[in-house]
Image 1 (cartoon, rainbow, N blue to C red):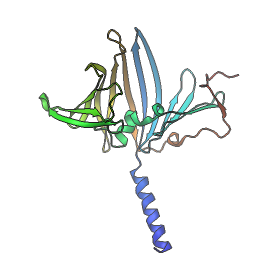
Image 2: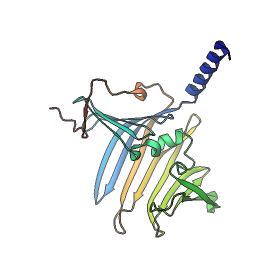
Image 3: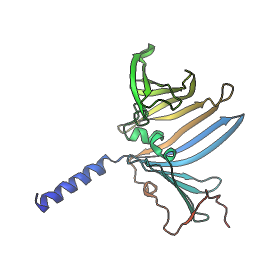
Image 4: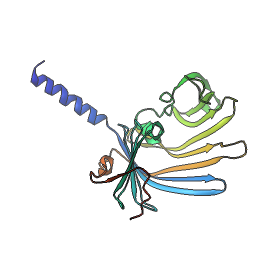
Length: 237
């Protein structure tokens, strides 16, 4: 292959890759009810289909977090110029709602990524479709997962333990179309911590912008930030 043809091939590949890159920015409010107490966390998220997720928290202290599908996590506090870094699989943003839909995994909410395979599909009343997934590797405390779709969009997800009891439920609603991308703007999660106790989390997305050019998508921790071994408190020393 000639150098000219090779250059054209490379440029074409880069152009296609750049064109396929999707971005979503949104404001997020998360309210959690547990043991009679309600906590509220607000942030701004900047998610790319490449898997990079930047979050900005402004209260009570300004700080930034950066995660990716490999489980790399960084937390930067500009007030103290400190950065905390860690790598763990549970830090991966593969289960982030925006990332799942951006990466084309919204139909099954990433169950295929987490080690589940489709076992059966049934049609329910009202045109709903219920899909049952089984773990490919037993022994994780989950016997099956049920996913309900309406008009090909997921609206309900439930995990069952080995005893056949529901241990968590997820409800998705308020779908809106942004260009050619459908996103649920409301998510309600119920986690059953015991037979008598549970936690309820409601997540609402607003001010959604798709394929924008906000510089926060490419935010990087300043090179002069001081590495710390514990999560920064944000208090100046």
